[in-house]
Image 1: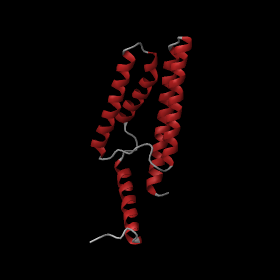
Image 2: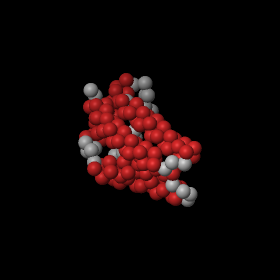
Image 3: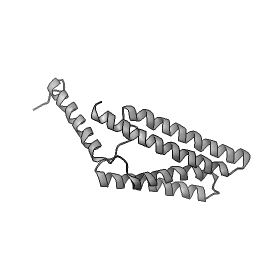
Image 4: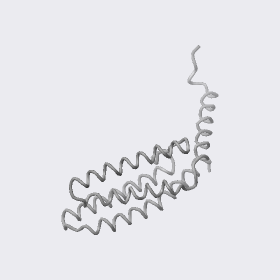
Length: 152
C-alpha cells in the first residue's frame, strides 16, 4: 500500500499534528527557570572573560563552559521532555540571531582591546553587559516562543 503524498487531507492532518506538538512542548516549558538562567548567564559571562585569561587557562575555561552548557541543555531536556532550539523559525529566530551578533561583537571587542591595549578590565565590563543583554533577550525569546506556539 502506497501513500499519496499529494493528499490534502494528509497534509492538513500532518500540519495539525505538528502544531499540536509545538503547543504541547510550549506548555511543558516553565515561564522562567532559575537554575537554567543562572547557569546559562554564568556561562555567557565566562565566555566573554576567557579571551583575557592566559594560556592554557583560556582554553580550559572554554572547554569547561561549553561542557556546562551542553550538560545544562541535556538536563533541561530530561526535566521537561523537550529542548527548543533558539534558531527555530518564527519570531524567536530574530531574537536569537540578534543575541548571537551582540555577544560576538562583545567578545571580539574584549579580545581586540586585550591584544591592542593589554587591558583586562574591559572583559569584566563586557561580561556584565553580555549577561544583562542575554537576560533581557532570553525573556523576550520566551515570550516570542509562547506567542508563536499559541498561534497569535
